[in-house]
Length: 118
Image 1 (cartoon, rainbow, N blue to C red):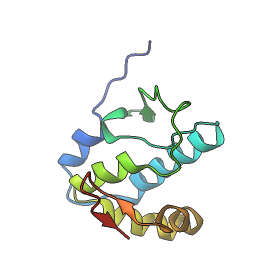
Image 2 (cartoon, helix red, strand yellow):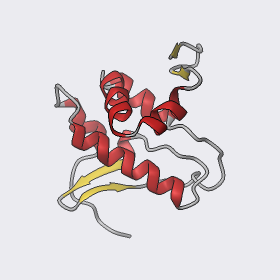
Image 3 (spheres, one colour):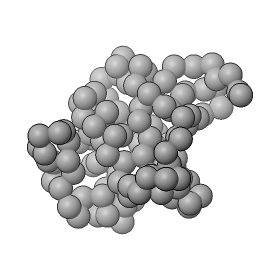
Image 4 (cartoon, rainbow, N blue to C red):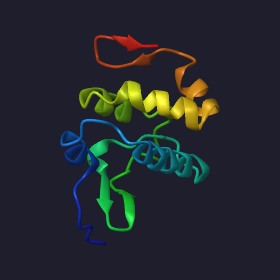
């Protein structure tokens, strides 16, 4: 097991007032790499992304090969809690319009009460 020195992304973002495009690009890279690697659950909760001196590391993706999920719904929920979901999606739309279109072709469920974001 590797020891990772650095905060998780959720803790880091609590101290930020804006979501940088660099973070959005790194998150997109993680999600695209998961998809290309054959993961069925394409998601990355903020608490499972560790910021190290060498970049982001994703940990604890135990259900990623057994659960089918094509959109990062937990990531969306976490970013919404940090008030970064809108800026994240705007940046994704500018960086990767195809991924943005795929993620938003149906409403994004944001909570158990089925409140959605289009």
